[in-house]
Image (tube, rainbow, N blue to C red):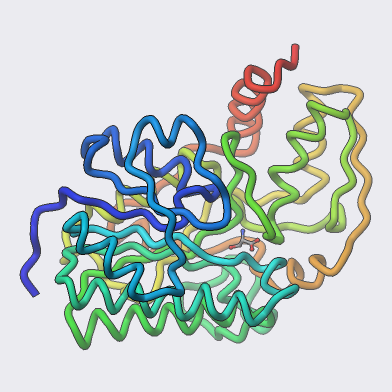
Length: 323
Ligand code: SER
């Protein structure tokens, strides 16, 4: 497969938590006219419409994916569209259709249209409770309990297959929970770590849906952007893993996060009422060993818990008018 220069980029899931920030990073780097934002279930923001080209796209419709890729002569794809863990447990059939059929469709279009480079989002959900939960290794048992996690394991193997069988330059990260100030996540198990900021500012209280001692791996959005762009910028020879890279960042209990937030909102009260998502959280890693990502393409996160909380408060206070 001959690689073409990267000039037309398609981002699926562009109206989601990560996509809605990635499109602006990409348009700064490659030019606004070169970024095609494709979304489905959420409406694009005015800001998005004013900066990049927007297309409505259901990734489970292969013809639609194919037409958009051909229309814009796409040579790089960031495939982020997906149904998250908790939403997937409510509708496993939809999760399978969007996550599995969607990925296969995008991989097929990438192969057929000679796409030079592709990114796909995997997740910490690929692991199950039988994997070591602390410092979870890159290579270990992958027996997840959610349909979302199953779609990530199968997806990782499918990406590896397209790389070895067809030479597709596919790259992937096992994203932890992403904390961000622009767009809320939707339907994930790690969503509490974002919701808590909004509720602390707006209502001074939050009912958290996991126990206070729950630890899940998290990452602040600027580090998520940096990791994604750095991975995609790396020379193909640096990419030794074509399933998906572990990505470590932050690891803290829900209570530690609440206490950090209290430094900014002293009257903040957090209650804990675990629901069905607790079981999912208990099956996931608490922290990850990301040595291969650090060694192969130079991954190094910048934000710790205090720095992330400070930045979140600065950004959200301004947006939500909190003094
Ligand atoms: N943030 C995702 C979720 O909670 C994990 O990849 O489903």
